[in-house]
Image (tube, rainbow, N blue to C red):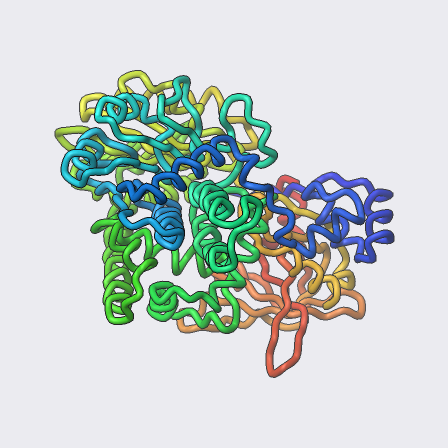
Length: 585
């Protein structure tokens, strides 16, 4: 499948004005304009990224009421249970809120996370009944789940337990009748940022609790220190949950990543060690997304996520090391299982005629591990570039996990063809669902038809959105250092991509690394020469040789070696002169 190059439109006069007034290169000014930063003062604030830009938790719907109830429960010594989800977002949010309540003086607070395979996602009646009747829970507060728990909220009332729901997932047609709902997008909400992850919402509640145990406006010093350290949990959850790294999320991740290296969490330090991350050199979103996140997730996928919460909250070094090693082993097992299921999914799709004219892909098989199907759905959606649902079929309620393609609202698509589903929930990019084995074929047909009618031509084709087309000479060390200030990068604030036309190869490409899949190449244009590096496309590069010209799409980076800082281009795609004439622009 060819990749379409698309360059964002720009206004040259606006670019020059912002560059002049903010003291930036035109390339950086254009990158900021593409992200909605229009004025010099906004550019300064964006690049500085101060925590003062966070919104006060009292403005988040339900946060003040939830904090008041939690504070009262702490003072009265009531039994509190934090009920979280089993992914990184839920684990980090549960760890954060449990730690906050303990530090604020709660004498009897515990946590509970349902088993992914045995119980499934969200608040379930059996667990809620057990928490009240066996554990004596008097107040249950959810993290990263519950906004669709309409029946369970009614059960909580009948059991006489106080229920606070904190969540960020898409709100359905009916709201649960909990004692308090905390959600940035509640009907009538004026909260200025609606894309917090579940842990981000929990952080806001914790912040408000800490204010209550301070002077009402500011937390006491030890609780303020806790909030700063807890940003590490928010950062990991925000990156792993793939919510937009814009607005508050960007600030939370920016400062949370800085704090990871100095974290007082024994468990996090153990996890960094087993993940092979040297935090003294800083931690980036890629390391969180591909090393820390998968290991935390592995607990919920193959065992119990409460093990990961124990890791992040323990003060026992030996126990932390033991759990961290276990999570590493679970992650290795997960990788093996995932690879096997991806191969089987490919075989099913091939047997059905391949991609063809499909709108959406639905694959399922008995015996697939429900804890891994979310990752498999991501892989299939990435390869075939279609909204994908992967289902672990069984005789009871079969679990499914879905992933989207850029720009396509997955939750709306599933909602439109949800007849026969036992349950579903999620948001535009990812969702989960339950169905009977007998409903699988009918759902697959409805989902494909829905996607066929809804996907636009642009959404069906892989594309690269280019921020700016520039000459090679514009990629200076100063400009790239300004680009680095725009971090952290991720969904909603993607790594900047620039295109450079008609660059010549100074020498033949070099193939390095153990498998020879890393390509090093030097480009020249006029008097400027820059080093480039590309991954996982060696066969295409073998067609190029010294003296040939091509156009490239790349992310500018700073490469540090022996104390020297030089510009390096991380190449995402290229076209030869011949390909440029026939490839879509």
